[in-house]
Image (tube, rainbow, N blue to C red; front, side, top):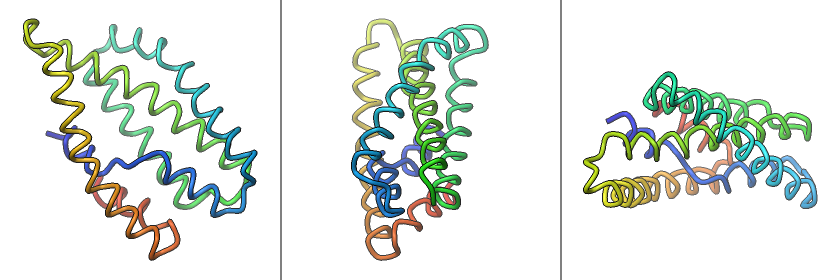
Length: 158
């Protein structure tokens, strides 16, 4: 249940990029921030896969939600400099590295073995369907209220 609720509170990485751009970070630095995001994503995926094997996938998925909340809170209040953006994009990369792999492992673990691929596809489809309205609401709020309210919207939902 909480996973579906979180999917509605989740939104696309592009909002973080737009928030960084709104703070007058150069296009080159935006590309470097995106690269940094991917470096952290890749760097934490394997170690947190090991952690999820030891303590359970559901706990690691919940841990990733806490990291995402910290990142959105940071973007809402502290993304005014390049240094802060570097830290925050790193945190978002950590969130994605933890969440993406752990969620898929968790679904594979609880699904009937015969329907594992169907379960993964269903979760991906439902997450996309639920995330669409979230991104639309965040986009409308962001266009009208200077990219800050989507981050508050997430905080309110969580």
